[in-house]
Every structure is written in structure tokens, then in C-alpha cells.
Image (tube, rainbow, N blue to C red; front, side, top):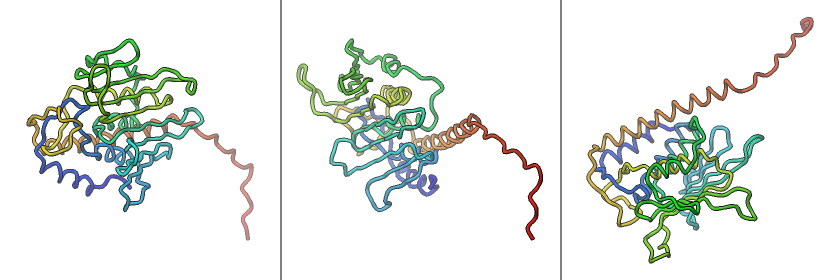
Length: 275
């Protein structure tokens, strides 16, 4: 079913009564509202295929190729899982995300599924442009050294490297502290999607959280936002409308580029009428 006005109203009801706080850095902002992800996909035509009485949410894309699973009762560290089935021209792939990954950062990834960017950017480019420290061994870290991006090299089991993002508590010396959240993209995940995720991750603008919302770490900085609660709601509504329009445009483009079936030849003479 498409995203309903009732569902949008429920989002608005929560956030219109919640004073927003600018929360930074993004990787420590906490999970936020999962509807940043699920509303965006539903607006693009993804449908829920999970049991409505279950805590688990499963959404499937209109072409049935992509499947997103949110399982808040998962016994593993991965609450979000996204799978793409292989096609005749593209391989399948898999990505997963931990409980405390901010929904707005994950939405950067899922939004790119709806309307691919016009170019195939280098995933490292947004990281370098944001001033994160890039190491020679294929890793980068945030200014506070708590978030790490790594392109792990080839192994005997894989022909291509895979992307790993981890946010960890400060450690001692060369040792990292306990993990806060992670993101993993297997070796077949399209680079444009990884780039979109990293672009949202390193964005210097704060995320909006309520005063009592859960953050990823006590060192996250929260300051009263200049935005009014209604402006937060309006921004969500505008984004949903934009995604709807982008999804329609992408579908029209796919229709235009689809091969036209050959016309059947007309019979030489019409068939005799039955009596």
C-alpha cells in the first residue's frame, strides 16, 4: 500500500510536539526516527510484506528485486538488512546496518535506490571533501577519530574489496573502544550507493533530535535548534513529495528506454464469423 495521509499525520503529530535540538556529529546522533527510511521507500512504491502484528518490518521494491528488513528484535548487531537479487545484467548484493546508525544517514543510501545519481562518483570523494583524515592503508576517520571508513582489500574468498564503516567509543592507544554502530556493504554493492551513504555520513550539518531522544554517545553535542517543530515536519513532507516525483520520473525513463516489442503481422484475411 502507498504511504497514507494517516501515516504522515502520525509522524507530524510526534515531531510537531517535540522541540528540536541540533545534534552533532552525525555519527553520534543516535537512530532518530526510522520513518525517514520507511516513508521514503513507501512513497516510491515499496510495499510492506511483513506481518502487520509483528515488530519486524519488511519492505519490497515494486520490481521485487530489493528487500529491506528492519528487525528491532534481532539477536545480531544488524537491525537493518537490505538485499538485491541478481538480474541478467547486474549481480545481487547485500548491505547491513546496526541499531544506532542514524536513520537520516541510512536514508541517504535508500534514497539513491529510488533515483540513481547521474554520475558514478568515487565513494572516497565526499570523505576527502569533508576533511576526514585519510590514511594510506585504505581507511579514513572522522575528526573525533570515533568513526572509521575502511575499504577492506581482496581476500582469497572475494575478487573485490568490501566497505566497512564503524563508529566506536574512544579507546586507549592503538586499541579501539566498544562498537556503537556499524555499516557493511559487500563487494557487489554499487559504488553510487556507498557514495550516497558516505555523503550523508560526513555532512557537517547537524541532525534534529528531541531533548530525550537516544544518542549514540554521551559526547554528542546538542544545542537548541533554530528550526521550529513545524519546520521539521514540513521538511519531511517536502522530502517525501520530492521522492514521489523522482520515483515517477525514474519509472517514465525506464519505460522510454524499454525495447519496443515487434508488431504482429495482420492476418491476410479476417477469420470467418462463427455461426
